[in-house]
Length: 83
Image 1 (cartoon, one colour):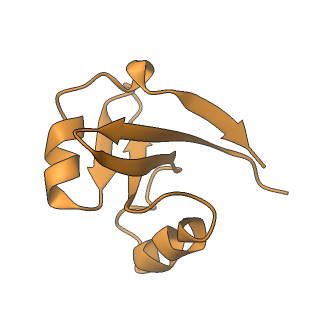
Image 2 (spheres, rainbow, N blue to C red):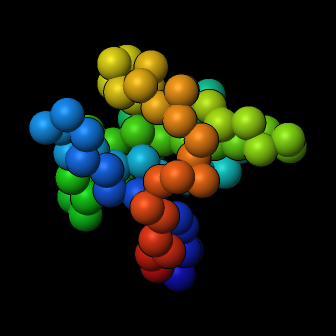
Image 3 (cartoon, rainbow, N blue to C red):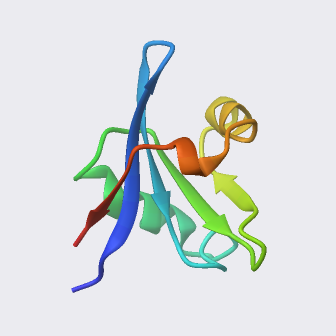
C-alpha cells in the first residue's frame, strides 16, 4: 500500500487539498489521472506538489491556488500521512 502526505487547507472560503507527489509526476502524461485518483478521497480542487533536491516546491492544479501557494512555505501546511 502506497503512503503519501496531503494537507487539506481552507483559505478565503475555498477548501482544497495539496498532495505531495514524487518528482516527475507533474510533468507526467498521467498527471490528470493522478489528480482524479485523489479526488474521490479528498476535497477538490486537488493541487499536486513536488519538491526538487533542495526542497523547493512546484505546484500543479488550479492556477489561482497555485499562485497563492507559491508564497507560502509548505512546512506551514497541516500535513497528514495517508495510506
